[in-house]
Image (tube, rainbow, N blue to C red; front, top):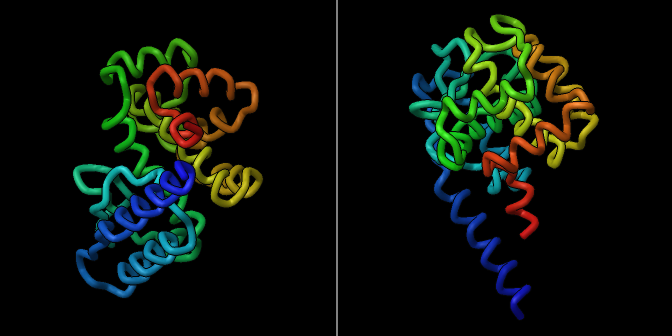
Length: 202
């Protein structure tokens, strides 16, 4: 009886979040409407509920790249228009920026210092990482969460190929895809309270 109740509760929560997702377009252009349509398709194709941390999404062709704040904004670059997998991956990436801010245990300085303990030598600047050390360190965690979620949705091999093909954050993705780093990364997620796998397993 309890199992049925929990399953029903999870189903209702999933429907509730899907109903709350608001995807708007800034210019109502063909490209923006295509991205909006594909995001809506992805929400129907996959249960993205465990990884939705903000429900207000906008699509803006004037943005050079996607961003997470203050409103999660997807851009309309060709790679996203051509590939729903790329779109899905980046959408999850931006959601995980919200996850880190909302659910992360330490403050930002402690968060980054702890990551640097494990990864003292990093590469910054395009195409290796972000423009500065702090944001590059933060992206190690965000990109690892992106990889875990994408692996659950499309399989580990496809997720690895998708991320390794990216022309940006190349050092970051190489780092999080290196099997030898997996234990350190898992430990950091647990310390920071960001491992959604533990929550899903309860």
